[in-house]
Image (cartoon, rainbow, N blue to C red):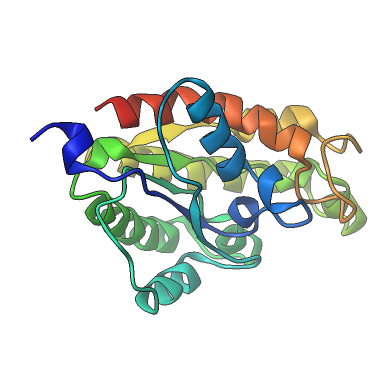
Length: 209
């Protein structure tokens, strides 16, 4: 059976505020931008089904997934989760186990094909005006984010999923008003476009597999 016959065009995006696109229109969030960029490359894909909510931690995403009736196999599954675990002061060890469980579920939803799953790194909110207003230590936040991302990258590599680092893009964006919506925390469509540019090659590779 060919890949085109075996898989639908369905695209599932799992995450939190960064996936649902807090503060931007539906068509501006990065999963929607990614679908358009893939179509522009001649890669057929549906608009994303987004399972995400602002504030969700790994366990809250897992609980939400328990209540969803999915329609696997999905041609592409993305996973971006963990910033709220870090924000709430949870440790890396706890995140590691929860993230691994979510990634295994994502792979199952992709028909058991890890190469159809793309993990996206956690952006660094410590550079934003929101963090500055709370007098949070940007170095401490960056260190924690790096540790969470290192764990996610290791798990993705072990299980065979792609890992895309957009953390550097978020740090470059900093507190630029053109890159953050009014809450001075979440990205604008312009920043999401930069994320999409980074994610696009991995997503295209996943859909070519």
